[in-house]
Image (tube, rainbow, N blue to C red; front, top):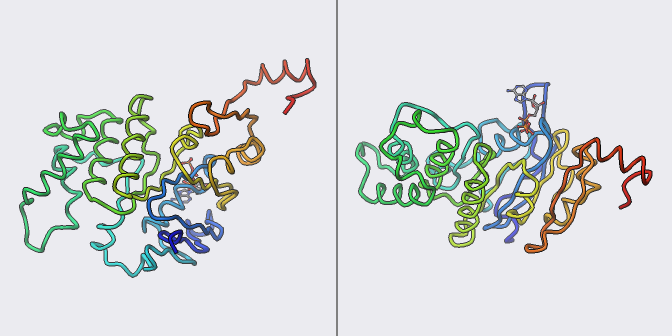
Length: 276
Ligand SMILES: Nc1ncnc2c1ncn2[C@@H]1O[C@H](COP(=O)(O)OP(=O)(O)OP(=O)(O)O)[C@@H](O)[C@H]1O
């Protein structure tokens, strides 16, 4: 079935007895652009680490195209799945060499020099992410946002089917946030790249993702389209914060507004509470 490209079935993983996911299940179609949302400490990164293999599975299954991820050899897995972590490496190598590391899964044994094709692919993604001009610099000479862009370029250079991203826009200003998300959306549509990303900004999640997984206390609270997940009732249940939701007049997607305590007090005094 198309919806079973990535299938997570009753996944449990975590850190000893301190925190564990509680039987997380969802599936994605190939070509989905999905977001994991939820408050701090709700288990987003733990879920992400379970899927990427950074944390061992305690129970449950992860299947990609009906193949258990645990049965794939490391190199085969790296050709299919690329991971962009929240804090990219700042190793002492040039941006170009770092991005080229995305081609390692494609190297033959004893092949020590990158083929011309690999350089062409790496440069294509450096241009697309806007780090081409920095390619001769060391990673440590880039700003946090530029390092994040370089990490995305490396992941794309891997030419994966599934891209896992842990808060890809956390260090970026709004121009770069929108640029990167537009790029991811374009690659998602043009190359049928399946994307699963942790994203804190609910408005960006609503605007860009076609499927959302909202976590609370190590379990999935709600999953579905942004319209299904991002209602004020569900956001308030999960985040314990008063919000107002409307519809973005251009995209038709949910738009979420926060309300300060002062305004809430005024509304309470004048009207006895928010009239929904
Ligand atoms: N290495 C670890 N050892 C033990 N507990 C951990 C470890 N890493 C995270 N935790 C705990 O697991 C819980 C879930 O953490 P996780 O990083 O998955 O949350 P998150 O939803 O990604 O949060 P945030 O939005 O703050 O990044 C938290 O209570 C955290 O303290």
